[in-house]
Image 1: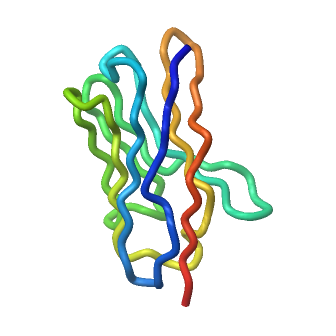
Image 2: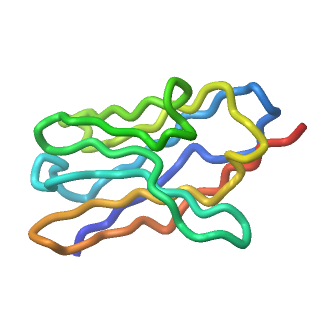
Length: 115
């Protein structure tokens, strides 16, 4: 069973930075894509950033130029560097991976941005 473990969430002031990390129990090159999603309070889960096995990267418009997704194939981790955090970035952040049309999710890590 694939396990994804997120870390790095916390409380930060607006304008600050956080780095989230997702550690996979298996080689991340086996996944066709890995993503970060977030779910703000009372809202639906939304896609934040994607990195595919081929290295293609995409971001939600709301985080472009502020967030950066990256991966370390040796450590089997996918990170999300978040800069210039805004109040509206407050959410539970989830790591997601896809392989052979199966979805895998982490348990999430909370990011709270304060004014």
